[in-house]
Image (cartoon, rainbow, N blue to C red; front, side, top):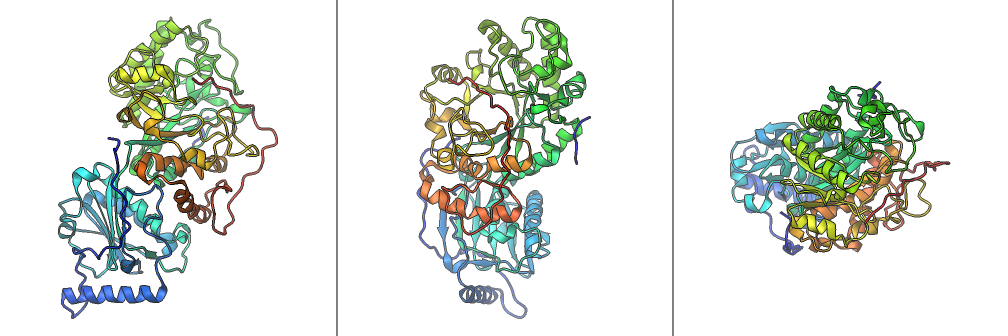
Length: 584
């Protein structure tokens, strides 16, 4: 039974850290019996007096991960969130405001109602005292350059009287809300009310992503993770402005998504997992729930159906797909490269068409991942012919083909994206595919694979691509990593987490954190902001946040964590034997 619990930038503008004056378009905030301009002056003066008595905000405006493109602090304009605060937003941004209020209500204990504003102009979300008059159209005038911010950028203005986020799209507004969340004290992650001063450092942030594709992959095939675990991973991605969740749904050890036209794929192929553990699969409603939850957080789900190799679970369910037409035994080990569907049988292509057609129909995003790696037993000519036909079947669904970089020799189809996971950046075959029109997602195994151990004594994970500590995850450049591939051909970056040795949500989090924010910064922040000493300092402040939020993480000795008690995971006495893939 199924388990169902519930345009790259070239040269950023330099960061300006000089204090600036409060915004001249600050909202009017009338007080009873006082004319509006005087009321604004009175409120600002009162806020500054209170701030002076309480001290500055505990955070700096640039204490954000990923690093913003531009930061202009104004320490004289710190904002203090009060119990009478209201979120004001137009209809298009209301859902973002509701999510922001949902993040802040538990720890502050404040009601934080969401109210409407005047429609028109850029999307604007304002957090201010209840009696502040904030006409959205007037506030937004001249505050945001649509062309500059693009689809995901935002501007955050913090004055003593209000916090205002402006953006062109709800996605940009959401990213700005995540930045505001980070600028509040760490106890904001508490599930229960905490008595602290909720101060936000004053100034302005103007921010946008470097790459359009920023993601992580969760392998749910080697070990199955129930829906609630996947939803929590979505939240982790959204927190750090990652916008794609790649789900590795099928492999030798398990088939994890129901396909109506081939029901035994899930019922039989989904019953196993590495080490003989319990299997499971997602019903169509489960998958829809994941997709919808992610979409609300501006994360696009990228489903992967791995073909022609990594298919033992499918072959157990449907022996007619094997070259010998005999069912193999279920597989619960971790070796790779031994299984494949029959590339010479028309029944195989009917199977591919049915599966990608159903998965595409359930997936509103533009991508469908075809896998394509480690089909070692398929002759090169047969492999290429299979891939070319399978690519066309994916394209026929209206989706853009994504595949591991082993697809490179195949004929190009419009829009094709190769996910590069090598450990040697000298890859002429991939560079040739790019010259023929392919774009790349960078996932180098020795920098971005989050199933690699941090250190020799890490209790879970692999080391075939080397040890990946936080600095190694951070110190590389996606735009120049593969020789012969121009920066404009790089769509973005993705951090895969394979789960041969990862069995629980706590272990997933342990391998994600603190490396996931490092990869997120590579994908979001301008190259000119990348600075390891400053990054490790900013990242250190997130340890207390993760602890407060109940997020398990590895307390890396590279990071100067403040005093805290991070969660640990128990050592596995007999970890599974890791796979040993072949890389270029």
